[in-house]
Length: 368
Image (cartoon, rainbow, N blue to C red; front, top):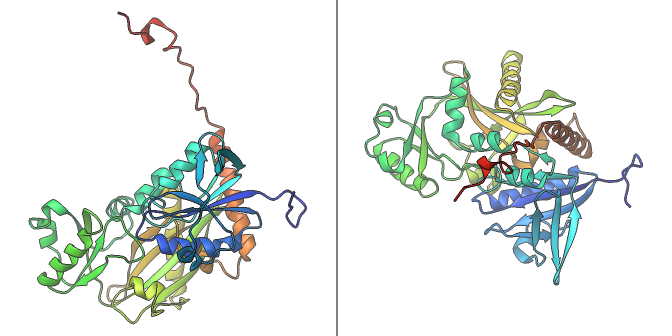
């Protein structure tokens, strides 16, 4: 039996990552980094690009996922908080204390992993089904933010069938940002400065998703990132940083390939920084998030106005970089796991069985 430094038995954590998603590779990177956050017995559950679950090595680097094909398939055992690994004709059960969602994008970050863990009865480091699904959809997120009183940039949502006739789209002013509604990591996002570019950008966005969000682009602005989680039941917010790029907007290549994007401690005013932190905490509470989230803001320097841009329920690297200086890596993981267990225990205190008597009564039996 392995123990933590304090002498207690180590928890068994299942890191779930990969999946059938355009952000599959980024999820692999997040999981490989997250392994250093947890002083626990780790079970690495890799979902391939067809969503088949395998047992992966805890020592696998991101590149090794290209070179080595996992062989042991994993199944999730509903109602047991356990995984099953096939060894020949025998199913070996692995009890799991907590699952950690490291999936980005569809089939993971959108509530699918949360639903799977809920069916299994696994405490989860991550948001629940409803809040995950809402935050994954940029259009629904924007509507909810506006209804709750948060400022969002002017825009329109367009479906594939009405793209040519959308009146809301015709009222927007160039330049415009075109985003697939159900993607992250800046995939499929393009800027359009005229009608021809808009048509091309929307065509590319519709390759990924049947619904597209088109927004008026700010021309003199900077981005601000802030994360939030709960510690001992209280919502706490992270440090604030400011991503910087040489391009008009942060692209996928900026973030993950060309290293054009940098993150620096923000030199924004203390007043603006406090407002970013306040709104981040309020968003966390009002959407009912769990685990750690990151909220991305835009600040328009022309109008001095702050906008909420996007919400990430599985931020890259689980947003540890925003908490550096306040937590060690394992201290950060311990905080996330402790809160996941506390959340699960609270949910288990509710009643899930109702003895109606319907099935044993004449009303539950169809008479011939």
